[in-house]
Length: 171
Length: 468
Image (cartoon, rainbow over all chains, first blue to last red; front, side):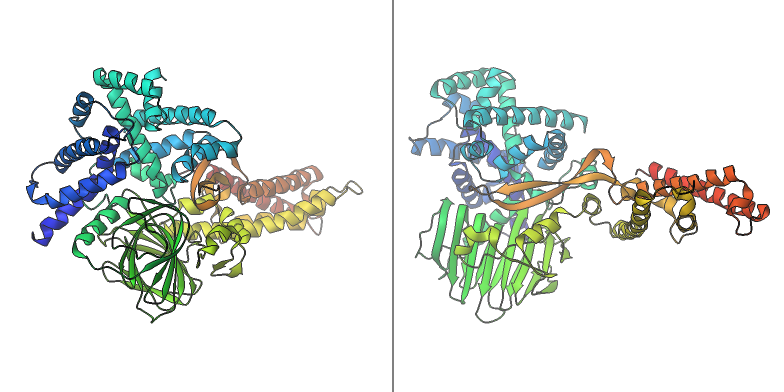
């Protein structure tokens, strides 16, 4: 076993990388419900292979490569997965460089953007993302067809994304 | 929004048709900007999904965050992932099988490993996405875990909660059962208590409330604090143990007891125990809904909190007197050409004096302390049945300030009353205000009132310009 300080450093790096790794996997897996399972597998592989990582290199780049091969392995073993990108696109997206900015900047920008939304719209978004409630259930409660709500949520998220990008550019 | 952007969102929502998927796949292969958009969408999704991890968001916090350096230290980004990972590592060193058994469940929906009623819970991080479960530990402890939660049973008398909420009832030996949280351990001293865990990008938040008996909280750096029946705390910090902050008996630290699985569905009707004695859920919610936005914005600024409490006290005292006088004015009918201002002259003069010749330096009061410039908005998290599981308050500025504690509006009212008297005095001659109809005596009163009016106006103008 490595000296505790190197191990702690590895855990800190792995911890820090979790959100980015999940986004990376979500992208390659087309937001498959199995994303968390693949992430957990990636964590195990990274831990087992921790001695292969050179602490002088960017951890996230190494982690992305491991994640990429785990995704390929997952698709090989899961023929029932409905939305599977072809190898060419997987390769293109898999090689894209990680964004090394802090997720906190985005969170701050998003909080500012959320406050600009109408309170009902904001509440809808929050419930959808934080309440573990499905679009169908939410639509039923709102008294509108699920498709109408889906479209509304789609527009709101796009609006939010544009606002976040604008905010990030100005900070 | 372009049509391909819509397809990206449909892909993320998993509502895309096969044909649309093929179309999008082709476009993604050839269009770098669209791939960048896809990436941005996923980043936004991730931030949205984790946003409730910013409890007690205020303008002050936002400002300081916005101006912060972009560098993120190794220790700073400790979110839910941190807990999962740290515990994941723990997994590699702890292979023993605890004897904690799942004895009941209600609409349990697991992600990853699923456990059935009657089975022993494995020593692995478990993800309960929906529903609730009841666990019996050999230590004579019962724990009800409510979704969404990440937790791990680590021994016959210990568990980790990485995210989510639980109620533990320990009838065994005091000090035997413990719960690890990302900020420290909670050790049961023969009691029933609740724990709620959530995370931000920088730190974790643990809320604990003792329903019966008492507990001990021990932070990573070894600091201990005891909590007794009815007491609660918000504990914030990182799993590295540094910068642990404990707010005892904080008004937002409200948890419902859910000692058995049957209480899970009945939760909204449950009685909430609090520091102030027993109160109904409705009372508790009312109390939560009525705290003021400024208090939220002044978190972690004790000096400002004390000043604001004093201002509120002063505002309340003045308002009480102004309301009495206003009521009298509304019921007054002019008799023999004596106006209300004339009839109530002693009371009005006294009010003016109290502002000018006061212990309080009114001109130092800030605008937002003297009226309402922001309101509390609640982000509600609901379960699949539409019931609110927890709520997060944040302050939102009002486009138009409201009267709030009415300090400013009352000062203006007092100034108006004093002005009315002053005008009458001027009209009726200097001797009017003198008990002896003496012009010199009256002139002295007039001059003094004039100074008071200037002082009141100065205080009002100062408050209006103190907008920091």
